Length: 334
Ligand code: SF4
Image (cartoon, rainbow, N blue to C red; front, side, top):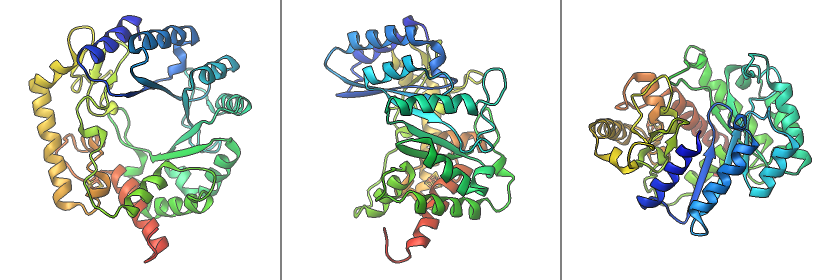
């Protein structure tokens, strides 16, 4: 990303009064550390200058871990940045992750997380659960234990604009994923030292006494603003911003205000379609109060429309996970 794009984004957020008391800036997509430390030193100083003391900024890096050095670790500490490392488990389970030369990235990533651990940086492990992973939960659990991560999040291998999930064709995937979720719960229970994002979400849903409707960020325009390196932006889910597909680009920060995107025919058409899909979920899905129809990019990737209901991702991540944990607790709701 050029400093021009960064400055234009900051100016728009300020001039269009889109900021609240705190702002989380997530650096992700491809490999964010590839931009280099010098770039981030300058970028962080620019952000701080724009936002002054008025807004509390949290920087979050979502990295594959391969480029983490001691200098990066010192930078993370200096800025209190949060670090998420994308790894999918043991060397075999992580085999799909390759470096830019197409070679397995596992060993380099292991070196990166060793550095994070040496600097006592409390990083989060974010894993994609493939058929391979859910078939061998013990290997995954062993990896998590040995990795030194301080928290865990996992999601299933999804179909998106650039990738068709192998889970779509896999037999018995619900049983496998349910068993995987229960095994991970037993290994990392909520009262234990390792918080697991998916279980925290499950617990909040099950402990909630009032069934109010959750409103996911993917349904609130501009709440989850995602800006590409060339300034193109999308306003619902970041997963809609693929360079090969400009259908969900709502504007460019270099050419006009962010809020102009809300006046376009594209916005009207897409938001109406998203809303139709939400209505479908609300009318038919018994998990609607837990999920809120969050999965908009997956709906489009799988069906070609936002006006859709169930997807592979929600079937596993919400319905199967909730059902399998509910079954584990029986009447003793967690
Ligand atoms: S779980 Fe799936 S079908 Fe149910 S509300 Fe969420 S997105 Fe809709």
